[in-house]
Image (cartoon, rainbow, N blue to C red; front, top):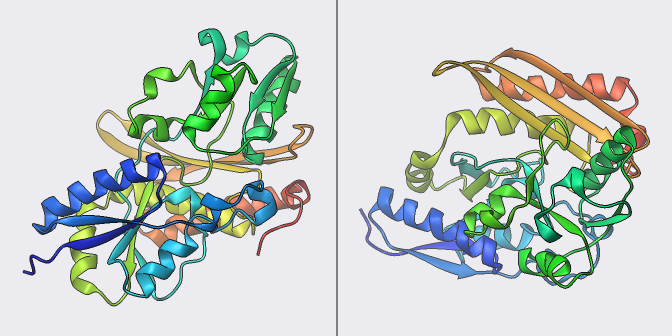
Length: 319
């Protein structure tokens, strides 16, 4: 086997470098080859516009994919929630490692929980999905909050709270876990309150479809249960014809009886960003044995959501 270093394409952010560093170590162990990180700047990293305005879908991954296709890197690591649901024929998701905690969290001043925030509390998030569900929860429980659109990396977002500009910001638990800052979380938001983005907490390792040896090696890192769950979630997103910046949440829970996984529950939500209208449905059944079955589950739940008016709650549907 070759001892030449493998080149891993990654975004430059602290989180992306931490994620890719973990993957590089794991790939090195299964291949016996050194792995070099190749830093790549994506459009989403340099644009200051809101994700919904620049399209959201693919803005963090296009440059990485181009580098893989041009042979500038051997494979790339993405946050799965950033990936468009359409997979190019030339590329393959060779591995979806075991998922981290998919929940959203808040980092708030004075170590406050979400329900302890004062009236008029300003909460920062750049996600229409989070905005919609937080506003819906506030409406249902008589809470007075204001969601404020922000962008930036974890440091930037937390600084809004530290500097007193905002009372709290919403982040993904997985990101804080991966950079060793989970202790800064002041509240974990229940998935009954805020469903995460489809694929949140999961990583995707992508390479060219014609590199059989690399696909086989990377496949050692694949977690089948994670793949089945996120396949169902992303299938729902695709069937809704919604991009990753749309106000869509989805989560496939694997339900266990003791140590044995028995069923999978797929939940989906779509809502207007002011929280005034929501469509939230779920379905539970046997754990899919194939990825085609997982995709079918997502499509079926999406069809039910569309029948209840989900399309009209998403604004312009992404193609």
